[in-house]
Image 1 (cartoon, rainbow, N blue to C red):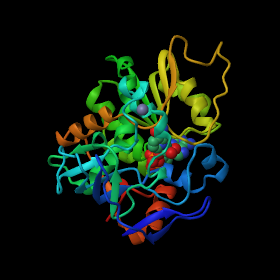
Image 2 (cartoon, rainbow, N blue to C red):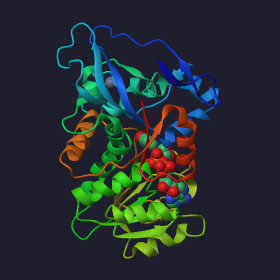
Image 3 (cartoon, helix red, strand yellow):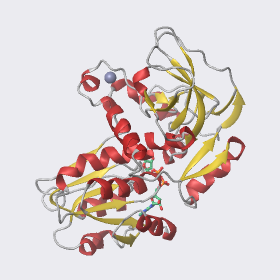
Image 4 (tube, rainbow, N blue to C red):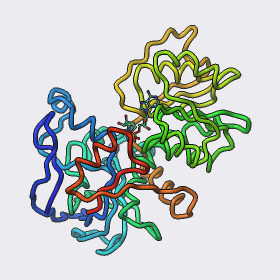
Length: 345
Ligand code: NAD
Ligand code: ZN
């Protein structure tokens, strides 16, 4: 089968031929319908070997962690899925047995540092091996070609929104910094699940227009060193009850935390490599929260699929073939996509 693989550190991935996986006991092989492209893939392809070694990743591996498709083959002992079932694959992997997993924080599983599409073979291939059936969500009406994007762009942003929902009482304000693949889903979840005023910050005109279409109440041009100090005054009052930062560079972190009101929450989702520099006496939100996390839980993924199945959120995608994958990543990098880029297999 054809697969889009990272072959060497800091080198562009390539389409190569590899063997179709076969399922072992308890495992499932999915025939991939579509796989979404994430900004994190771009970060991985430029990651130095020193970081890869530190987290235990080995080359080569196939990229892709937003996968939808149909069950192709099941291993011995699998009775809950059958060939032909339409499914999406939960984006992080987990052991199911550690303290975090049994408490429902499976996105914090220590074995999740390596997963499908990050350190191990992912969904940018014709077939994908899934090691545990708990990492599959059965679809009803949704098209598996586009539903894969719900598992990361959808479910990761949902995790962030769900975490700040208790702050978003009537009359509150929520800020989304960076309305790209993840942030535009966050706008939708905020509108569906809360009554908060939703303010979007993005330096791309088309992304701000799209955010308004998705229900944002106000949009602000991107945050840079000059505007960082001003975000709070634009928000008004004592600041926002919740700020979700899908960029994560120095200026957005400073602006986001600076715009969070006392008792509010700032969530860092973007992997922009920024640093939090803060004087606790006058900068961190008093009585509030500053948090980060990686990826959604299995429960988040199921809930997002349920919202999409119910027609409560939109799944907008830009479709590309596998041979055009470099163009798709270029469009993601340049900010010219409208929906999430999906490689249709
Ligand atoms: P994307 O490229 O689709 O979206 C990024 C958005 O941010 C774009 O709309 C862009 O215009 C906007 N932006 C860039 N610089 C900005 C600035 N200075 N001010 C305001 N807006 C700005 O990327 P994506 O796939 O949505 O991913 C977003 C981030 O989330 C990436 O850093 C990615 O690596 C990270 N990510 C984190 C997790 C996690 O679990 N924590 C999971 C997936 C992705
Ligand atoms: Zn675990």
